[in-house]
Each structure stands twice: as C-alpha cells, then as structure tokens.
Image (cartoon, rainbow, N blue to C red):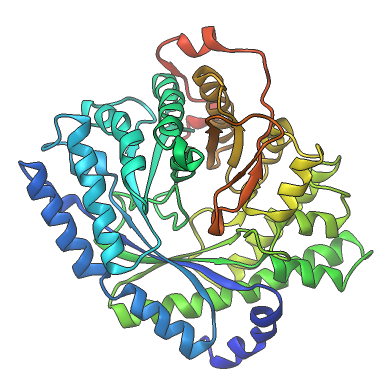
Length: 454
C-alpha cells in the first residue's frame, strides 16, 4: 500500500531537486471510430476523445494541488491513425483533416500533446500507411499539439528499408513545411524501431492495438534527484553508486504509482504502466549529462560516457521494478540534446558528436533525440541515420528512435531555439560522406538470427 508518508518523504525532492510527474497520458482506442467518410471519422474521434479524456486536465490539477506533486504535462495517445482512417481516407489531404480534428479536440480538453498520428510499417506498408506518411509534413505544419511516429522495424520482422527511405524524405519535407518556425514540425515527428504499445512519452506515443479501450499511463522523471543523491556518495565504490541510484529510482517510482492510482480512480480508467524515465528539461539541475558528470566523466561524450550511461540505465530500471509491478514504456535514461542543458553544453564544445550519441543509444532507453542538423543535409543521409539507429534496436532487441531536425537555413555553428520543454540546441555536423546507393535499394533488411525463438 502507498501512503501519504511516502509522499512527504519526497517533498525535498520536489521542492529542491526538480522531481516531477512528467506526464499523465490517457491512451484511447479509436478503432470504433472508423467510418465511410472522413467527416464521420473526425466527428467520432472528437466525441470519443472528449468523452474519455475531457476531465484529464482538471483531474491532474486537482491531484497536483492536493498532494503537492508537480504534474508537468497532460497528454493523450490514440490508436495509430493509419488504421482508423484506412476505410475513409483516399488522399493525404483526407488524413490532414483528421490531424486538424485531433488538434482541435486536444486544445479543447487542455492537453499539451496528442500522439498517435502514426503508422506501423515494420514489415510492409499498406496504401493507408503510405497516404498517412505522405500527409505528415502538412499535418505537422497545420497542427500545434499533434505528434507523429512511424515504426519502421522490429527484432521480429527486420527493417523496412522502403519505409526508411520514405521517412528520410518525409523528415526533410516536414522541415521545409515548418521552416518559418525553425523546422519545428520535426520536433513532433519520430521514427522508431521496436516501438512499445504503452509509451506515454511524446513524440512516439500511440495507443497500441493490444491495449484495452482506455488506459492511464504515467511517466515520472527525476534527473535532478538522482544527481543530488550521487553528490552524497562522491568518490564511493561502484557498488555504493549503484545502490544509491537504485534506491532513488525506487522512491521516484512510488510517487508515480500514487499519482497513477489516484488518476485511475478519479477518471474511472484502468491503470496501465509507470514509465520511469530520466527525461531531462532545459532547466538547470535537471540534466542526465550532469548525472554522468557526477559519476565521473568530464563532459558527456568523453571516454567512459557509454559505460556510465549503461550503469545508470540499468540501476534506474532495477529500482523501478521493485517499486511497481507495472513498469513499462521505455523506462531508463533519455538523452535528448536540445532538452538537456548539460548535453547542449557538451555538443557546443565538441565533446558530444552524433557518432558518440549513436554509441550511447546502444545502452540508453531511446535513441538520437532532438538533434538539430544543417538544413541542407540530404534526405538520403537522414535515411541512413534512421537505418543505423533502427539496426541498433533490431539487433539489441530494444526500442530505438530518431527525432532529428534539419533546420532549414541554418548550418553548423548556429543555434536554434524551440522554446518550452523542447529547449534550444546547437546545429551539429553530420558525416559529409553519402549513402544514397545503399538507401536506394528496395526491400527489407531481414530479422537477425536471434529473432527466431519459439
């Protein structure tokens, strides 16, 4: 049982160390919103989301006020829209209408982001999938709260290289479509491998088809809390270091469990999972890079960074699973460059490169996240980066992702401002050698041999 004493114990974490519940996300199945016309689909979607999550913002505010726990975001995830709109949508413009409808209802119910403008194409693409992907640039340009994701591979199916090629082109077109806002549309678009069905974190959230009709998932974050705890064991052995991280993660997860249970009870929606991810913000003292520095590396990206991150990620998971029977999602350490002040500084001084970030993604929770690159980067190079990251996920049986932003009109040495939780970032250089002949090949990279388990 969770009691109020456990919350009182964490008051110091909340007041001084940037502990927060990063998001309460209501997942909603829209499979019953399919219809013959786009207008009918949009009307059903608006009604279903409003009925299910209309009280989410008010409920989160009430819980936050009563328990003194900051709840930063309220979000909704929905069934991948390529499934919902398949019977009605005949053109990319039809899908854009659905995106606009999603944006309108998200604003109406007061959520920060709505995820699920998505397609799952890890083995092949239907015509509906292709239409949705082709609609993404305009959809991201015309909406403010809708997030899009495309899953292009998995350990079981391999990597759909036709989809990888198309997504490189789509990222570039999205950057062009939102160039007046420093290509901000790309910050709402992520390409995944091994996407989980229960991820509450944007931009990769969607409500998986294996889920029930509606579910509550909670994402908890506390890089500042972990850093503060490690300061008290500076110079101690790895055993002490690991125990400290594990115990801190346990306490953080218990806070999330309390919030999740309260939200579930008050909204009448079943509790799904707690995602304990050390997701940083641009605020000083809320940085995963600062944790790595406290562990002993001079700057994120220095030799030893990958090993330190692997240890951190593992101990966070171990502490979390002891605190809740339903830990899921991504759970671990995020390394989004623009959202982490320490990562921004490391990238700015040259300690952190895209190649080092790629190595770090082998052991962290996600992948290449919120990285600004020159706007003239070829779409084939973007596809190559996506393919590399998908290969890491496929072979290592883990979720990986690419959320990369080719900022039109900017180059290495420039800085881009996204604002809010998205922060700011230096434009990072990419390898100048190309991979167009590789990306032009059609078909699928087969699943690795260890995928054949039965």
